[in-house]
Image (tube, rainbow, N blue to C red; front, side, top):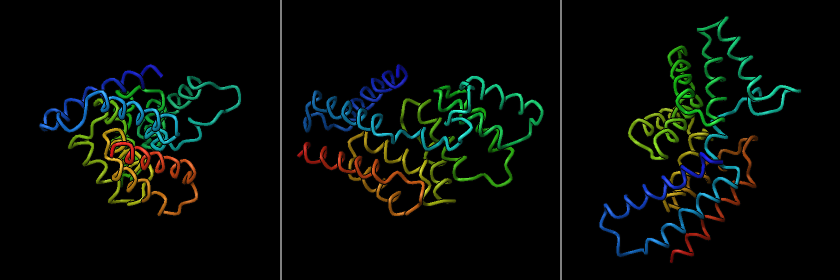
Length: 214
């Protein structure tokens, strides 16, 4: 929660800089900008559509495993990795655990190893790496992150982790229609693991915020 609060303040500062750097300061009062950023962040983090959630598709990490805690599960995976240091899947699973726990530097290292050790990297691997860098880089999609997302979507045009990250970034920077388009693409995939209710609710929230800005 603390991490998310800090990231929210970083987002506000970044958007204000972006806004003023493009000579648009007269088109929207800064107080209204901050209001839209805060509301957007609340919607994203309360809706269940957080990007890291979809980058971590690993039941060993996300679901309870008897009496084992997060630390116990991570320790178990790390012990396995010591026995099989070239196992790309183990590196990826451990990276997912770090990402879910907000340990972005460690997650990035693990995903790098996973990508390096995989003959044909998957869309989910690229999307997880992109999501990790997104949070590590103050929630800004730079050229490196965009390249990773492009690779993920080239392999799987409906990859939920990549599209959720793209939608979330559009949403918190007021590009509500582009966020809607990305979420709609997830719905159009008609995949069984898609949380349609949550996505539709987020689309409706985006539409309401679009109306409020007019």
